[in-house]
Each structure stands twice: as C-alpha cells, then as structure tokens.
Amino acid sequence: MKYEQEFEKYLAKEKGASRSTASAYIGDLREFCRFMEERGKTGETAGNADVAAFLRKLKEEGRSGATVNRKLASVRSYYAFLRADGKSSEDPTAGLKAPKQQRKDIEFLSVDEVNKLLETPGDDAKGIRDKALLEMMYATGMKASEIAAVNTGDINLRIGFVSCSGESGKARIIPLGKPARRAIQTYLDAGRPELLGKGKDCGALFLNYMGDRMTRQGIWKLLRFYGEKAGIRKDMNPLILRNSFAAHMIQNGADLKSLQELLGHEDITATKVFLSLSKNRIMDVYDKAFPRA
Image (cartoon, rainbow, N blue to C red; front, top):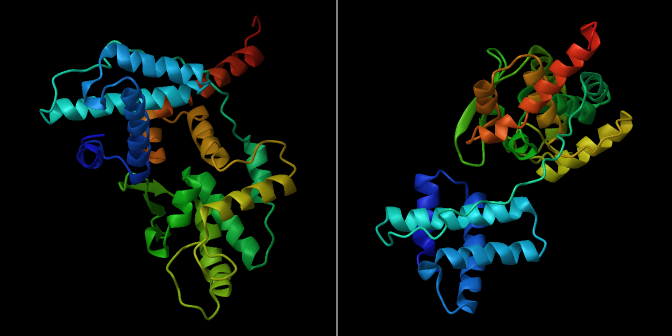
C-alpha cells in the first residue's frame, strides 16, 4: 500500500480511530492490495469491478457478513483519504452495498440474575474487590478493558462518578449509583489495602492478589466464576454486564442519545440495537395487560 503511514495518520487525526481500529483497517487494506496485485493492479488503481470482485472472494471464502462489512468500510475509508488528500478523484467503492448481517439476539441478564450475581462474592479482601468490580461494571456499562484501566484518581465517590477513557482516547464521565459507590468505598477502605500489602502502589483501582493492576483476562475469568457460582445459565462473556446495563436503561425509559454517551459509542447505530429490547418489553406489557391481546 503506497500511502500506508499517511493513511494511518488520517485515521487517527480525522476519524479519531484508536490504535486497534487503525491496525484493523491497515490489515484489511493490505489484504485488499494483495488481491489487487494478483490482478496486476495496485490499491490506488482499482476500479469498481475490482472492489466488487474482492467482496465476492471474501463471501466465497465463507467470511462472515460482519467481516466483509468491515473490510469494505476499510477500503472506503482509504479512498476517502485519497480524495481528501488530492491523490485521487475516484471512488471505486461507489454503489457497492455491504452484505446484510444476521442479527444476533443480545444476551443480557435479568434484574434478578444481576442481583444474584452481585450477592455472590464473599467478605474477604478478594470478595470485597469482586463485589465492587461487578457493581461498577453493571452501574456504568464499562467494558472489561476500561474497568481494568481505571485508576483510583478516576473515581469521585463524593459526587458519584468515574472518568473513563475509551479506545479512542476520549474521556467520558459516567455516574455511579449508590450501591456501586458503597461497594467501592468498602473496597478502598478494607479490600484494596490488603491486596496492595507492602508493595508499591501502581495507582490502579482494581488490584490482583499480587498487588498489580487486574487484567482484562482476569476480569473475564472472574465473571465466569461468579456466573457459575450464582447458577446463571448464560454465556458470561465480558459484554454481558454492559449489555445488561444498556438493556435495563432502555427498558426503563432512557433516551438513545444519553445511552450512546454513557456507552461511549462513536456511532449511534451501535446503540440502536438495544431499541428492539424496548419494543419487546412493550409487547410483553401489552400481552399481559390488554384484555383482548
């Protein structure tokens, strides 16, 4: 790819893309350019038929709709960059449509399941930490990676908020409810000092048994452990409490724009998937309450 470094800078500066997102786009573009080389062309000289052939190849290889969509978005972004930088006036992706994706049901916990999960941790230092962590995940909808990155200085328990830096590097302020604030305060008073011991304080809010910052993988294991212990028969993946937060917010009347800001979605389309949960709730209420439903 001729303008790889310039394109990477464009993604970061103009699109606000995180390093991981930019890396994924670059990987997609390299794959596209290899395909073009096989056709005796370069990424910069591709035509509409070339891009369409690339998409067909991906489908024939059995790539998922989501993967094909992302690769098309990467190619589109590259040609948008070339036009913006005056390197080309062509858009070989014009008129090409991404394949429709099969919508997967959003997995989330019921309020009763959340309560069971939050009541499961014990009273020792680790249990106090885990209670605070689970309460915070559910109260904020933060990702496991975001929770792991929180420092003690990012928390304000008096006012009740946490400052969260997402993948894009943009910080967002998320309120903390009273149960989460109480659990975090208990952890700061009793659990964290014991986990830290006499070691050097790294500043992380959540520490492992070595006194170091907890990892995303450690949080995943913790979720699975307590999900099984609470008898929850669902896939306790890292997003399940985030999905539960969003689902319960929507079901209780939260507006889409506010939820988008809380979740840190750059595109509101990502937030709209939770609207179906609100519609399902309306149908449930109708079926139960309307005499001629």
